Length: 81
Image (cartoon, rainbow, N blue to C red; front, side):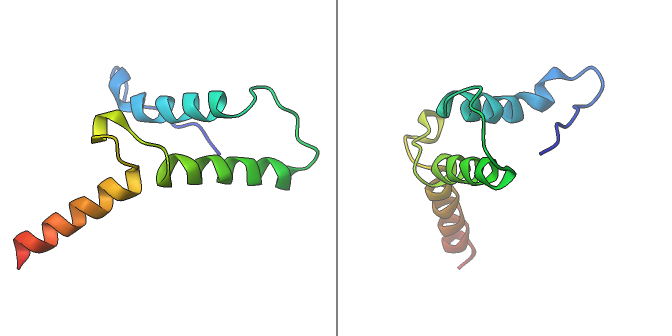
């Protein structure tokens, strides 16, 4: 993964990214050493899968990101019909 930079002088651009990094760091033992690159990648993939599919987000009405997205798409489709 690579860090991204926000627009010059706009600290709010990077808030969602920093929130995700914070969740990744505290969600698993911080500072854990991995034997292989593959083991580290598997750990990150597991954490992102949990974050997107199972973690309940209070700002989204206590649903997962994927559920929130699915509900939004369903609402857009019903409006278009």
